Image (cartoon, rainbow, N blue to C red; front, side, top):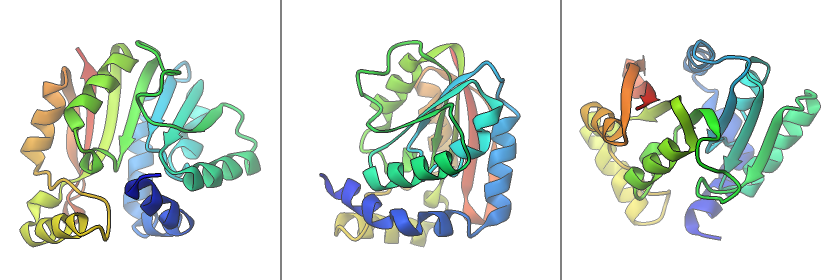
Length: 206
């Protein structure tokens, strides 16, 4: 188990409280995501955490494959889905390069609060592109902490000394450019909430 997996396993029990602290932004994220979904969609939720999003959109799509590197997160997400009798979500302790996921398998891939945590986002975006069907959508929300200089420096330092996972201090233009270079065209892009620097992007596979 690597350090990042250990961190998220420890965080799992408090994750819902942390993520839902800003209820307005959380609800906006769900509604804006739903507006791009169809009931025939097969969807991958990459970095699904405790299923906060997947469980809310399950009835809007055909099937969800939801993955996370934290087994504790997956256990919580599965229990919550079972409580709600959601039978079209398959939760798995897995990485996006898992061989069970094959080229052109998904209509939509979600990447919420993930891209800024990656060591090499370019390789992962290429994998996401490969997994999407032609014209498929990547929907992401990413904290662009590079827009706040002191916060970006603090988080970078915290990652280097092992207090928390490494966090990439994206600025919005860099984030948009990074996704476009992954062979995507931007469909929609703006802040979920300006004060939090959380940037919402919908991008279509070329």
